[in-house]
Length: 562
Image (tube, rainbow, N blue to C red; front, side):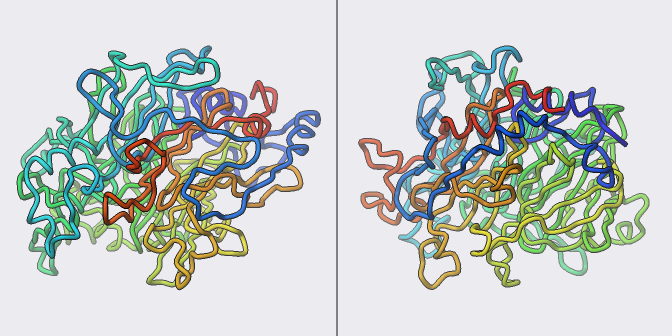
């Protein structure tokens, strides 16, 4: 199948290329076997502009600051604890960001969605886990309540004036979604007796839908209410949470978490999409086919877990359809379908149980174990699928890679594909542990890294040469095409997450997440970014601007590149 490239790129320019979500009028991407002149073509005068962009990257740094390449600057939009209305404050550890303008003709006023992945109790609830052998047993309900409030997500109106983005306080659309928000299950069968559950948590990356609602993904859910595991006789056992111990005060089943969640920005209502499976979702990237059916790519961010794809059977549905899991060796999408898979019928009682226990089901039918599949984005130039595989230390993959999926005939609902490594991490390519991806308006690939705070800047660790986590760009044109160039370095202990471009390509929204995460003594933090008077490190969303970004996004009217 082929697609209308003019509409494809025009839409991306309006919504922002921090993720790729396609409008109702788009059909699927062009064939991979199609000659290169069938892909996006840039006129010579425009290509000359892109070729002339000189990229001067920055060296790796271990400094406690957000350091940017020449030609870039940043300002903070919102940080942990900032008020958004009379009753609510911005949550902790912001991750994924997504901006949707109110009006396509005005890219400078709209709603920002931000994920809040997890908390550090030392800062959020004044609970020092270092004092106890079994820390979660010593928490109070009040401390847990504070932690529950600080995860989930935030919707806030932001506006750019005189080159600066800021929140519009007390806008009626500003609101918090937390671990106590009531959320419906988009499924006909109750889960653990409930069709409506309490809260969302472990919110890592996400996306948007073609109908312009937010997608937020529940990743490491087992740290909050534990997990249910099954032995060889299929007998369940509850494993307590390994991090927070919330189940001491709230009897919420683990099965209510680990889903893809959709949030309506108009009223804050939310639903969990059971058909997309339950596991540690890093992200969910949607594509709308010509007939309005939806394809959703999502990965399970854990060692030796899998890559998934949901293909709906009805227009605009994230409920009716089939969830597939990838065998990347054979190049096949395998259906996680109880009705047609005898092996699944032998293990599970129905399709609901298959989806709840998707990890087990995937292994039974032959899915390929991968090295922590995290973010997934679609290349606007080729239509290929890019997947970050962050690392797998037990397999001696310390630096990860970027996987490229080429769907057969460029059809996103195809059931066969080719998988190859696009970029391998390591000193040779100058990056380690790839995490979030984003394409800018010229098709350049931006990437963040996810090295854990407890291994960064340690001489005895393989990550020492890379110093702090960073933001990189991989140009698609000119003498630097294909090179991995560092353009930002994070503060100490932090990672940079959730890159999302404004519709005009002039601003890169970015989260600075968990600076000072390795702090043991709140009076002596390992980071003091963003350098508030209290010296407490705070996650924040920043706006990065400058002539470097404008040059990289030089195509004023994206339609002209066809």
